[in-house]
Length: 83
Image (cartoon, rainbow, N blue to C red):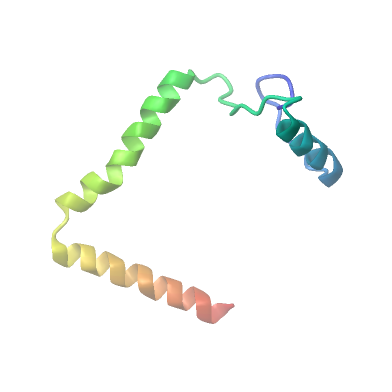
């Protein structure tokens, strides 16, 4: 990754391609950019977020889950017909 806490990947296609080759060949280490965040705290937050959807669905009634699924299906079909 580019050096520094807030460096982003290059937008230029050639520079991005070179960075990808460097990462693939092991010349540059590809590590996530957490900025000023503590990586342990980020991991804990992610693990809690992964549990949230399942916990929410367990609290919902079967009827409400069905309503949510129907709305999602309609939105997907609407999106397909617009394209």
